[in-house]
Image (tube, rainbow, N blue to C red; front, side, top):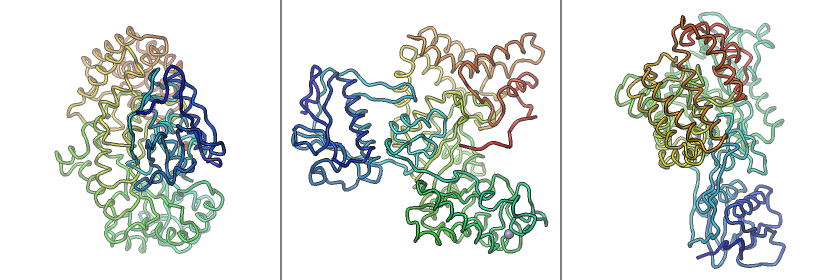
Length: 579
Ligand SMILES: [Zn+2]
């Protein structure tokens, strides 16, 4: 056994390499900090320039003779090994980020460390900390893990939960991240219609016999379009040396070019992805020698979701397949089996095809209701199963999109962000255990009521479709369900042990209030008054959006003038950038 701490004393010393990367030094300081919080013992921390003072916790593969003492075989670029060796303990990744993840995993396993949100974490109090013999290796299930929810962008939350999200505030100290340049639709940045259309309409989509300036795509078989795009991509790479992924991806309109040359390629390939992959491949092949670390990213989205028949994405191309048309009441595989002609079956077919031809297949997944961020979207169990499915099909990266607006905070956002991060690292984890862990840590004495609330929501879905633009009229939210949900939340508030927990549950209660108000008869005498009070509450939580891309005050107006918030007037700001 290894006695790390006993009665505020520790015989151990933490040591890093003399020239350790800042993320490794940070990892060592995090280890020191949380061991102290758990045990009360301050383990001294120094570099290996100092003489050996056994027993030691060596952090990073460059610490002293760690490299000679443990093999890193089977440890990937973000993985780590934790091993007791003679009287010492070694925590090391093959990269600084891997070492940092190793430290957080050590803390999770041995002092009960958990980071639930950007401002809620815990360690267990352990006056005596003793370790058994340890030898473990972990690698992430997915090379890219992004929880696209506002709170998950916090660098501390992301690093502690091992997300390498493009959007997260992950400095080098926190191990850095998978940084994209131009994360989304990018054809308009490659060649702008404002700049080129008037002189060169042939660069843009031919739709119904006419070249389009507005809501357009590029004519991907035009040789000048290729040359201009290649030059632009090279310029982006040169100007953004810290980015490793560059997007060459269709705009967000369904207007692929129908010119003779484009049509020939797409007909031969059986999909509009034909011209896209052909085009992206040519750029990818051209840059690979000069920039072997760079990946190009494109979408398989709406009109391009079906994989091409003959060509394959080049080895440095990421294809991000989106499942926007799907449904979340059940896992995708189950829905596909139930209805072989449905969206889920179609998605599964596309997934299989892309998986067969693509080395970096990523999924863009959806995890909330986008028309109504506060409306419950009980997808936790289907999401968990879907991640296992993606892994089985050799998917390499997953983004889970939620309410990423500045104020964040949709229905169950905190719980979802945490559980998704945990499952993106390892989808084999037991989702119920992750949920229970979160509830106990985040809601304390109210956790039983919150579990009952979450179970009620998920059970109320049954066979009713759960889609990302459902209105509050959905049959999921029958009056008895809303009433019961509200009672459970009221009981949870009563059980809350302090003001902070109470506020967390009050925020969650906005979900039920929102659906209740949206379903209220228009001639209810207090309708407007209640919506005004609700608006005040929403603002007290600094929420900035309750409907995607819609001004907050306009959203309350929509609530007032339209039952079920079905009025679309004024919704969806065009000037909206996803960052
Ligand atoms: Zn064309």
